[in-house]
Image (cartoon, rainbow, N blue to C red; front, side, top):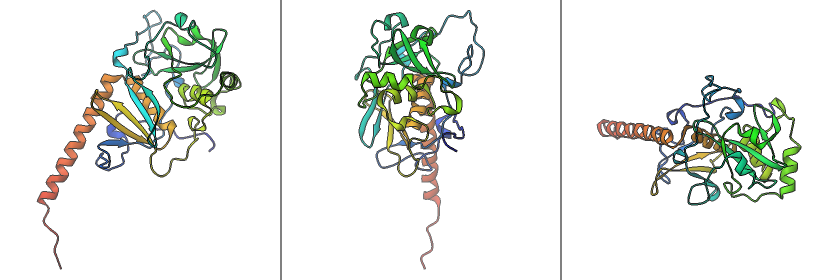
Length: 284
């Protein structure tokens, strides 16, 4: 099998496998436990296609990025925070590609964002160029070309992992240029770029065995006082779900969570009613 995995996807939290059959884990409050293989995202899109597969009008102006619809979240591995994207922890400002070039240094991670699309990650390698995984191939492109009109930002501080030296990051990226299709070890552009910078095998397909307890927790910040936690057996699975949330946007994710939690409450009420009406067992 190697790195080849069956592709599965889910449309809503109601379809995601959970730790408890009723969707609630009573240990640390309600959460959805996920251990899943997800389909690819941005690297499957054809040029001129929207995320839903429909054709876009080449004369239509590019969608603007709405920072107010960003999903703020944090990721924990066995209690240690390894990723955080929130206005409290780091700057979420975005720039035009031309302005970002004045801020980039070799080895930086760059994220391209726009409303309604998966974020696209790349490694800045100097001389106005980036290396990125796009449409199932690792490519060396000018940053302005890779942006495709999207806003962008440097995201070195999102992952709280120890980075490699800048020279090694660039070397990791450049050595992969030209790999495509079955030669690839990464499911999306973020996993590729993060692997280049941090060198962690967990970012690769099959980098972790999906058995036992789920060590990764994705905490979605619902409000200043409330959050919702999902569990995963691998970093790769967690990244895929986080990216799906980024694609949907904060409003849609909160609506999805609300719908799921309401359905969980209905299941619990039905279970409680069944227990109340069920006759006691015979004592022999």
